[in-house]
Image (cartoon, rainbow, N blue to C red; front, side, top):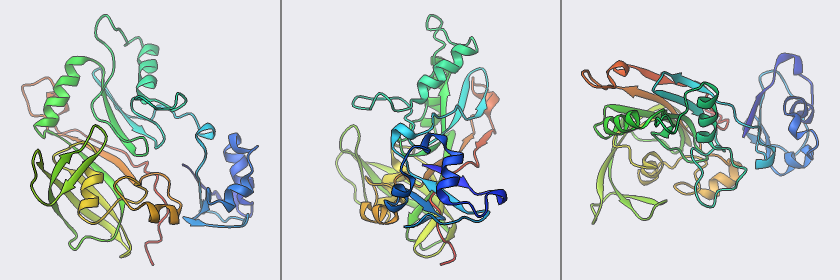
Length: 305
C-alpha cells in the first residue's frame, strides 16, 4: 500500500491528479478504474468517483506488485554489530521457496548496504543474519546481526526474554479491560501454520501476550501488543484465539471483513524493541536501549463512530 497525505497546496485537485503527481509509476495506469475497484480509497472509505480533495485528506493506494515502489533501507538503529530496519508491507525478510523473484527482499538490501560500507566478508563471517522474521504483509522493526556471534547472542537473549518486542495493531472488537494478558497454548501444525487453543494439547506450549488499548470505537480497537513468549506469528494467532482478530489478516483473521473493507495488508506493525540484556556479556552495551518507530501505516479508521 502507498499512503498519501494531501498538502494544502493540492487542495481542489482530483484524486487521480494527486496520485499521478505523487506516484509517477502509476501515471499510465487506469486510475479511475482503480477507484471503482476499491484499489484507491479516500480517508479509509471506498469511493466510486474521482473527487476533488482537501488538505489533510488521506489517499490509500493498493497497487499490483509491479507498480510497487522499490523499498528503501529505512534504518531505525545501527552499530558495528547490529542493524534494525523499519520494513514496509510487501517486502519479505528473506525469500523462501515459491516466492516470486520480483518480491523485494530485505536481506539482499542489507548485504548490498554492508558491501557498500566495506563491512561484508564471507571469509570473516561478516554477513547479515535476520534475528526476527515478519510476514511479508506485516510492517515494522526487523533486526539483523552483522555476524554469527552476535546472531547467537541475540537468539539466546530472546529465549531468555531479555529482548522484548512490541507491536501496534487494529483489531476487530474491544477487549473487556483496558490492559491485560492473554494466556493460551500454542500448537505447531506445520512449518507455516500455527494454532492457538485454550486447552492444553499434546505438543503444546503455554504462551502469553500482553495488550493495552490505545483507543476504540467498539467495532475496532487500536492496541499495543507484546508477545511475551515470542513464538512465530504468536501475536496474530493469539489475538484470533482471544476473539480479537487483526484487521487485514486473511490467515488468522476475518477474510470476509477484510474484503468488505478493502484492506489488503495486515494492520500490524512491529513498533518497538526493548533491550534488558544485563551486564558482563557481549550485549551489555545495549542494556536499557529501546528502539522505536513512529512510521506506522494503517488503514484509516473512524474512531469517533
